[in-house]
Length: 359
Image (cartoon, rainbow, N blue to C red; front, top):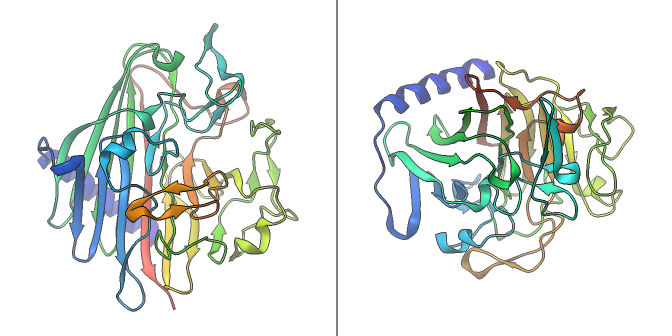
């Protein structure tokens, strides 16, 4: 039933694309979508989610996404709060790869490696707002970005789009697409929202209960680069096949969770359940569906004294990230699912964030 409802949502999405129009700039560079008491805000900087507001079990509204007050702050953001990251999300070992006999050297920005597309990755640039419908039955906004041949070292021109849409009862659809115009290139986009279902000012997420539908992970070395192996989670702190709190396992790791899960129920043309999160105090529940093969689970380990919305200061473990994506460093591991997009082919990455209340 879940997959059927998701499919219906995507049909609605296609229809709205056909009837959309070019957006006019909103005050301050922040764009809002609203559906009853469910609302979300976005900015062109990184095509980022600025806020997601929804009620708790008592009807009290709260913003469940970490971020900043103004669009200007996203322009100088170093956290990737809410951004679309790419051209290749996550890490590329040695900031290099070989494709079709040509060796490409990328711009490193984490030691000798590349993280989230480099120092001027997709999360650090201004996207164009090409379609925008603020209200109605299925409000939505579409951002687009033209990445030039050689940008951060990647081959070929690439046109990328991301569409955010509110549908049904408290559901947010995210659709990321890309087309290679003239050269084969790796593409791996990810949505990098920092979620705290208790509200962005509610403290850490250690009491959140999470279930991840991935029975394997891609282990990493000390620089967080995948070794190329795929190993089971059973018997490790990474085992969230059954719901349990983040805090019950996080102390078994040096700093927190930051690992890619191999999802059990996804395929390129199939949307499957990736994760569920429950915040008992508020009653808020999040179900995440995707067609991506991997899920990077990150517990904001590197946040420190980050001044956010309303002057609130975020610290480590103030949020969790659920970044559905291709496997990290797939360009250097032939056994990982390929993220190469060739001219004439398209990249399509879908996510559904389904919110509800559970006592």
